[in-house]
Image (tube, rainbow, N blue to C red):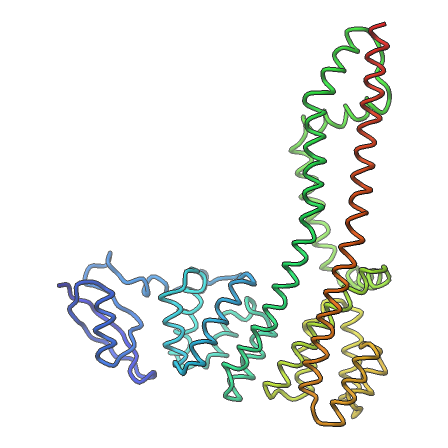
Length: 410
């Protein structure tokens, strides 16, 4: 039996310290729970056997700076399930910390738990420690849910938004698989011709004293450049990507790009629908969580990524501030399609705005699916045409090279 020291929570609010004898740390935690305490730290006399919970205490510089969408869903789902079962927030965070397979979630739960134990609310700890990781929408809705006493219901609504984003992301990735495979095939064909076929023909032509046709020579020079200076090509691509990222951070360029993209057929529908879908979903969640309509509109506006659409929504919010109804405000800016305007107007008259926001978000989700399907159908033939042009170019170059080789032999 070894001696273990512990820090535990009594009645979910008071910290107590003590020591207990047990065979291992797991048994020590079980004995502490039998005493009616919730263990937060357990460690033995020997520092090398310090409990995992202690090692997860982080500093300002070691906090997590990024969570994937799947990790956010896992954290929100596990926390919502335990809160809905009546488990106190401290115990729920401790359970996730001790049992989550994701190390990042262990760190986050440990930090937030320590923040709560220091006197902060869950929303305050989440916002101050990981506000940038979870985003203004998430933290804002969590604060609203906690203030209204419906945190678990708000987390349940947040799961709807996160899972919808994951579903759209999955569809976009699925749609990009086909062109990615074609691109790899193009690269494979180019490597095959540049490494095996073209050098053999080129050597025969040089031995026979013949001249290499222009198109074939251009392709050979391109292949030789890639083979000899592939590192320079990688540096150029990396530099171009960095330049584009910095360019899109500039407001003027981003605004002009957003204006241009809304004029491109098919793509404009997808961009508009996905922005409005996020806007209406957050508006529905915030309204059901008890957030005032004006605050919900301002919070929902943060989900809009396109500057042109965001300006329309901002103008709508300003009209509401001036005393206009929601329907009048949206009609003046034209940010929502006519069918959705009818739904919003009916919701205002009947007092069922929450339901209408939910139904409008569902309509936009279906439009997003339709726009993405149309975009995929349009994109596939474009990729095929590009692939065909590439193959035609190689075929002509190969034919010229073959003809040049025969001419050098006879």
